[in-house]
Image 1 (cartoon, each protein chain N blue to C red):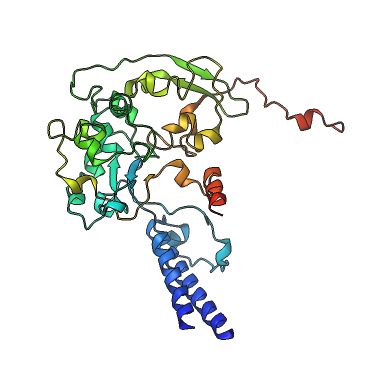
Image 2 (cartoon, rainbow over the protein chains, first blue to last red):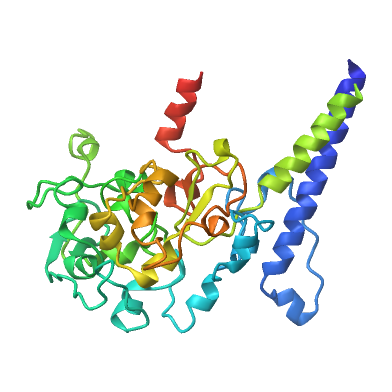
Length: 228
Length: 137
């Protein structure tokens, strides 16, 4: 019994060592030049336990727009995989962003980098574009949301959203970020295909700053607090 | 007893290998409703490639594709019949169905998913995933 435990511990520590080594190796590839490296001074060796490393739960930076044979979900042993166009080739000259495909698709469309068809067969069909901004006031301190119909109708048809996902009536759609993150409401597309929800993309929707005199509403617990 | 040690090592090594994130393009859809069971590689649908050429409306309004990975229950019979992918992949608008490996190009055993989705990027499991686990128990 003790032997099993010893062997298990050994295997565990071996595995941990390998994991640390792999993580270090991965870090070295993407690490920017530190001041110590510039000045040539030797940084003090800091021994932090593996449990307390920085960015413990963050996924490692991945290579952007990698070609199908190396992207991890295409099978490199499959002949057809090598026929597929690598995204970088297609994205040449496109305006970029910091999330999703790292491409600003709306700018690409308006700037003429792409001219996707609105009809399956006829390239000359023009989309029915509606230019109507909807202001959605946000209870908390985040800037208010302006929903622009224009870029949406350039890509989509009214029936894609109305009335199944959004009732086409002012004030009848309750939306919160939890729903969106779980793939409902805006999250039916945003976070899957159209630009995702990251810290870098908040202001794309939350774009109208609150007025200067705006103060966050006090919570009930504050208002009803007799000791306040 | 060595078996346990080997299991431990294999477990760690596979955990390391599996944790390497796939670098596929945002919004690549893996469709594996029936492919694995039929002995084919799962389908990888590149959204980016198609949105360069078509607006969302063409597939999601005209052709009736649901906004859900694997939610369309596409079969080859439907495609040959001119539904779903078959509306364009018919040798007229785009290349035809005899190029099996161009669509069926995923790593075998990959689950149906929309790659790089926000739900995939969440650090903690979502409510849905938790309830699934509970169902399994």
